[in-house]
Length: 164
Image (cartoon, rainbow, N blue to C red; front, side, top):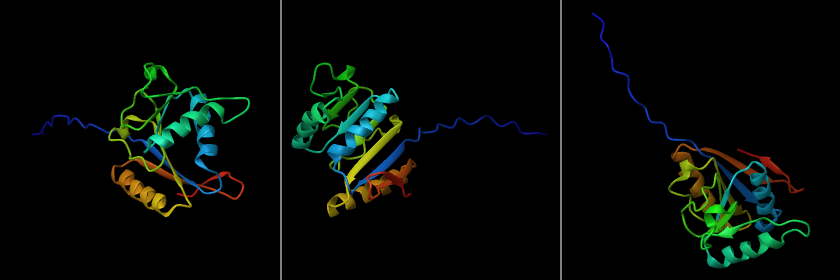
């Protein structure tokens, strides 16, 4: 006599790719616009989360003027049209523009809804010991949550090399 087993329903959590960018030869202000441009080329909406109002304001100003022949259209989560912006700057954990990619700067926490993003980029200052320690803690947190993680480091020419 054969036993009939009822099919089990397995709920799989989406896996987010979390990339750690170790900034050594270029500052955030040089690296972030390039990564944002590449994200927008892929038709991804982006959210940038900072940890301080000062950094948020500096990034807001810088994204309009980072290049003589270009700018990155963006807003902040305080803007009434934040939901329609391709790039939104925030201090909060929310995803105001339904972004596919989230950039964490200045030690901003991994979002509670990390699995809802295609990619999260953690950009940290490789010359600052506190930033290094924070990034290591985030790496362990992302790995424990089962996300796909990668570590990128700049070479002497400013090109990114995948190290792990």
